[in-house]
Amino acid sequence: MAFSIFNLLGGLFSNDIAIDLGTANTLVYVKGKGILVREPSVVAIRKSDRKVQAIGYDARQMVGKTHSDIHTIRPMRDGVIDDDDIAEEMIRAFIKKVSRNRLTRPRVIICVPSGVTKAEKRIINDSAEHAGAREVYLIAEPMAAALGVGLPVDQPIGSMVIDIGGGTTEIAVISLSGIVTDTSVRTGGDEMDEVIVQYMRRNYNLLIGERTAEEIKCRIGSATPLKEELKMVAKGRDLIAGIPKAVEISSVEIREALAEPVSAIVDAVKLSLEKTPPELAADIRDRGIIVTGGGALLKGLAVRLREETSLPVNLAEDPLTCVVRGTGIVLDDMERFGKVLMRK
Ligand SMILES: Nc1ncnc2c1ncn2[C@@H]1O[C@H](COP(=O)(O)OP(=O)(O)O)[C@@H](O)[C@H]1O
Ligand SMILES: [Mg+2]
Image (tube, rainbow, N blue to C red; front, side, top):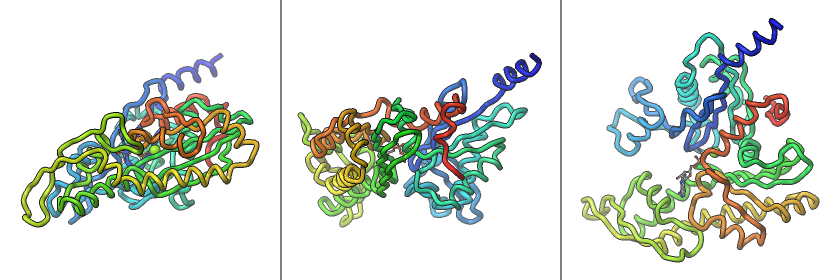
């Protein structure tokens, strides 16, 4: 009796948390409270003494607008840890943000790209421990994404999930709580932004920033012709005259600019289908593929994948939060889903 009351109280006061440590965005889910943090994975530091100036949204505001002593860093940029110390500061800052209650130290599950190295796992683990975690568990991103979209990951049924993030696209086939095949390519939303920057420079002599390129991609970027093609004005600096300039661009041009990264994603999906064992391939043919991650929101991308694979391809509901919601599902029922966690 006393034990169960103790357990009940522990449950009430615990602030166990699930973290999606993405290359573009970090999301934190707190048990019983929902998603409390949803911020860009960006840290601004002062170069002279490497002191952190801002984290998350505040740091993101500074991208492309800093003076020479301030530097903005995305510590997870290509799906791996780019800068240990800064990654650690970021993880700690986000955990601190949600840990009001310092009496009970939280259990933390962190979602990481499936290709992380042993050394990277250690850094993530240690950062979370330094930030006050009582126990730290890791989960592979595609597994979390699959849980987040409600796939039956612990059944003997093959499911394919494509997660298009900022730095990488991960394509995984999951069955019986494990990842059967996993293809990861370093093409994602960031590369789409980069090709738009290059396109504007080459075709208009216009230098635009990373954030402007992202805005263009989200507003008028596409992977298939649109019913009604779109237009917008892009602002930047004229490379010849050196002065601010604005030009009107169309979705047709931006689709042409995005052709290469979009094809790279399509090719990786086809390759991954070729690697899938036949019984599971049959399940995928029946049940289809689910696309998640912010990159899945590119207009026409799901349609393009459907055309190229001749399989049913569906866009996940709220693709930007699938991974953290999936990690939260594991946190809420460790008994059932503990087996999907990664070995450290
Ligand atoms: N409407 C949209 N169209 C195209 N790309 C989008 C859209 N919304 C967000 N993105 C892109 O999604 C990426 C971030 O996705 P996210 O799943 O948060 O990545 P990560 O898991 O790597 O942090 C960014 O590159 C962002 O520009
Ligand atoms: Mg992600």
